[in-house]
Structures are given as structure tokens and as C-alpha cells.
Image (tube, rainbow, N blue to C red):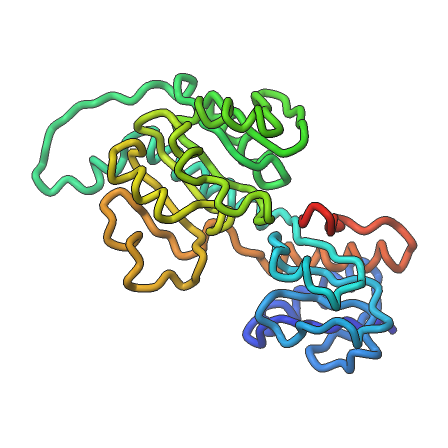
Length: 309
């Protein structure tokens, strides 16, 4: 019998127990799933941050740590973690991110805020350009970034993307490396941040790089809060260089009530809802990775420790 430890905040157990058992059954796995297994008996750790496990040194039998989060910055540098680590890539995460990104890109493209909040009943028939005339850039072309880029391209936006290493995605103008970053940002009328948080990407959008964006650009950050220098962003908004920002992730969450983002007229705060791991779809990814491990097949979404994702 395979023993799997569910190491996540206890309120997640009720959401995940039934979907995980159902997924194991579909994959033909006999799994003893519990939040209470002794570490030395565990074959797999199903993990999310803020759960009970932070020291993995006692999990001497564990064949893999299977994260329920797409981001792994809270665990990837843990010195006690010697087991293979897999991040979460699943349909629910992808669909949720696509919907959030597409919705807010369309909101800014169409200038919807002026019509939704119009207490003085101003009649200003400003017609937006067609989507094919609007340049949207995504920083990050991993699974989520590529999916969002393809969706925006299907809506006929002029879409480009940047990644550290070269990518080739049909219908997307792809940039890479340090030289490509400036070119990607200089064309971004709407910028979407979907990079992982690493030592190289922390504060990537500082004052200099925000200055590379066209005047009047909009910024969307559903990736990681620390990708953006908060003070530099507020300054760029105050000077009018940027027209607006919608932020879903922050350095401290919940965002403190006294943070300058809350009252800023050009900032929209959404409470880390751009994409959430859905138990039903995530359970199938976890089960498939256990099946693969038991069959001696390569694990899905194995984290590169040197790259940090």
C-alpha cells in the first residue's frame, strides 16, 4: 500500500480528500492518504506552503514531494528537501488564469472603467482601437503565460512574450534574454507579469524598466508580488507614465490596510484570485505523478532546482 501524506493547511483536507481518492482509483492506485502519517513511513508528500511540514529530513522513504502550488519559491531553497519536487500545472489553474488575464486586458483595452464608474454622467464617445492594433506583452512564457498569450492572440491582440530562454509559439512574437527584455517592454501597451519569483526576477520591474514601457501603458500582475518594485510602480502611476495597474499578488498577503495601493485611484487590487488550484483537477495531476513514479516513468513538472522553477 502506497502511503501519501497530505501536508497542507487543515482546512484544505475536506476539499481534497474525496477528489484525491477518486483520482487514485481512476489511476488504479491503492493509496493510504492521511494528514497524520509518520514521516518515516511516507512514500509521497502532497504539499502546500503553510502546512505542517517544513523539515523534510525525516522523510527517508519519500520518492517525491508533489506541490499543490504552481509557485515553488517557498520550498525550492529548503536545504532539507532532497526528494524530487514537482510543481502544480493543471487545467483548473490554467483556465482560471486565462479568464483573469483576458478579462482585465479587455477591460483596459476597451476603457471599461470610465463607463462603469461615471457618477457625473459624462458622455465621451471615445472608441477604442481594434484588438489587432493593441500591443500586449507577457513576461513569462511557461505553461500559464503561453496559454494566456495564445488566448489573447485568438482575440486578435498583437501579442508578444518574453522568457529567459528562447521560445517559439505560433502567433506570438517571442523575445528572450537581457537584450530581448527591453524590446519586449518598449512595445507593451498592456503588460502582463507571469514570471516565477527567483533571485533574477525579484524587483524585475524597477523604475528603469517601468520607464521602458510606453507612456500610458497598463500593468497587470497575477504572477508574484515581488516581481514589481512597489514604490517605483506608484511613482510611475503618479507621474502619469503608467495609466493604471491591476495587482493580484503582493509581498505581504493579505495586503495591509494602510498600504498605498488600496487608496490609489489608478490601482485595482484583487485578493489573489487570478488563479487557484482546483482540487478536482489538481488531484488528477498528483495521482498521475504517483502512477508515473511507481511505474518508473519520468515525473511531470519536475522542478529545476538551479533555475528555481
